[in-house]
Image (cartoon, rainbow, N blue to C red; front, side, top):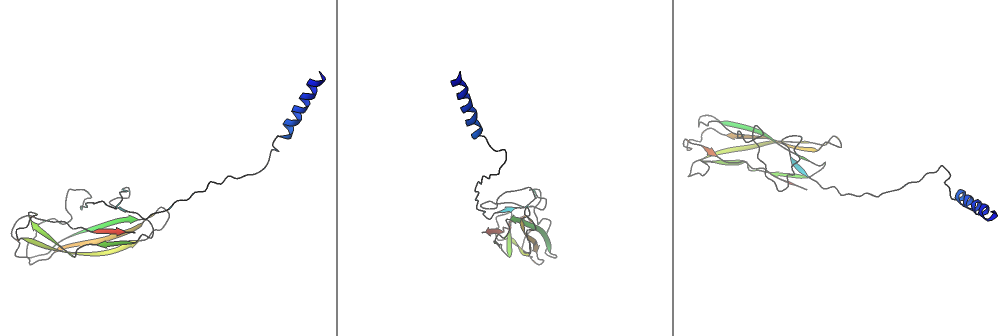
Length: 170
């Protein structure tokens, strides 16, 4: 019986010696590292997150394929104009280079045959810089398309063509 009590006393003493004190402080650190790459996205709406890289987007004046930006009937006695605002959003500080032709030819029935209309293209560019953590840089191009009066050599018919703006970013 004495052996059993002595063993119990040793076990209780060992348990007390290993117990926590009830207070203290410690930390665990988990290192995180991530690289941020520049990206630009087409911006027909705030909710489209399509990466511009390698993609081709079509913009119309209704945001769908219902009507071209420049439409209507041209008469050689007066200008015909159209406009569009082209926007992309990019990570803050992204360097963007835009390129586009100053003139676009519209070909009769899309294939020519010698008949064409010349469209002059101009741009008013605005950079809306990021104003917060969740706000992108917005590269905004207010485009104007004008078929000047006096193109008497274009015969009656439908004339088609595309304006293409190319964006490069890094």
